[in-house]
Amino acid sequence: MIETHVFAAERLHGDDTTIPILAKGQCITGRIWTYVCDDRPFGGHAPPAAVFYASSDRRGEHPQRHLAEFTGILQADCYNGFNPLFDRTKKQIPVTPAFCFAHARRKFFELADVSRSARRGKGMRPVSATALEAVKRIDALFDIERDINGKSAEERLAVRQEKSKPLLDELEAWFRLELEGLSRSSPVIEPINYMLSRWADFARYADDGRICMTNNAAERALRGVACGRKNWSFAGSERGADRAAIMLTLITTARLNDIDPKAWLADVLARIAELPVSRLHELLPWEWKTIKAMEIPAAA
Image 1 (cartoon, helix red, strand yellow):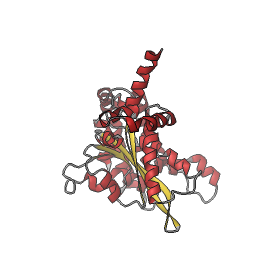
Image 2 (cartoon, one colour):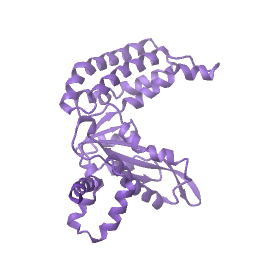
Image 3 (cartoon, helix red, strand yellow):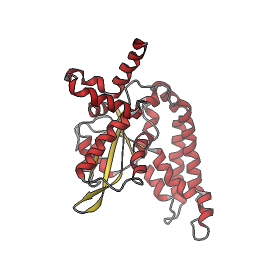
Image 4 (cartoon, helix red, strand yellow):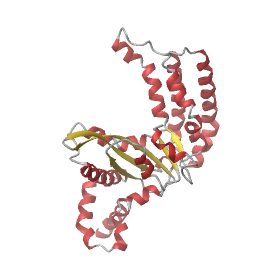
């Protein structure tokens, strides 16, 4: 039921991270995929939720299968495995991409990190003035987003059209002008082309108040997996990785709804066997939370 709720959303965040999986006596590098629906940045009322899947590799067939029926907006990095989902010749109703500025900014920041260069000393590439300017220009766009976070989609769109869109147009023009004067060996060419080759999909957020400027919602959902790699050795099998994905779906969705996962799961496990199928929706985290909130005053 959580899965159905997530894929019914108009907009999703998608991402993946590595997970070691024990297979045939050795560890392989598998993946955990997540898709998150969270409309709170634009004041939406749909409950936030996340669904996770596991796979033994990062082939594009996995997200293409996960999102086969999805037809909304996908916020993600520029992983090529998503590309067939955006192609009208391969999907009758294609997914609309909206790419992550935080991911793109990171590439410039690495070339503009003054303190990092100072720590590494001689032999380190000098700080790129172009990369530093790119970071400043992208940060100006992020400043606008901080002021409109949580406002309605209509309010966000109005502000973006007035303030963000001119800055985006200037950024695109500046990128193209910089490319003309850079040597072919300049490392900043790669992150500039990374954005320019997908510019419409990066800039799409300025024309839709629902879209976020970053894919941070999915990255936050995967943070527990990334931290967990330091605390456990591996998933014991591919089936074990699938079970881990199910537990991540339950726990992360509970947390997104400000619910203690342990309390919720304990109550669900105690009641689910006797609850009629027609009432199973009452155990969804957001439904459960509402019912529990109503029970407290009644008990008092």
